[in-house]
Image (cartoon, rainbow, N blue to C red; front, side, top):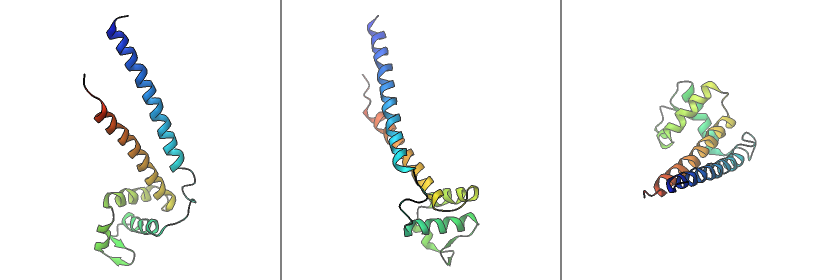
Length: 125
């Protein structure tokens, strides 16, 4: 076996270890985020506000609670609300869908953090 073959074999083995570790980290992140989305730990006021705004957006209304055409919506994360409103058009509106979205975004942030660190941490020889 040549030195380049040995390096390539070591590189593949390291990649498998890295992917297994990433899989375990993502599994742990999912375990911490997804169980009992609808019932644990209960409602928080900001969740209720987000659900109410997204429900109105899903119905085509730009409304913050009882205020029509309210600029208070601008104080909320607009892309998040639009994604949530889109989900409410497909799924039944409620806290479970809101928490499913936030848990999914949390999983995506774990993966993106890994990819960023891997890219920044790899040094060219």
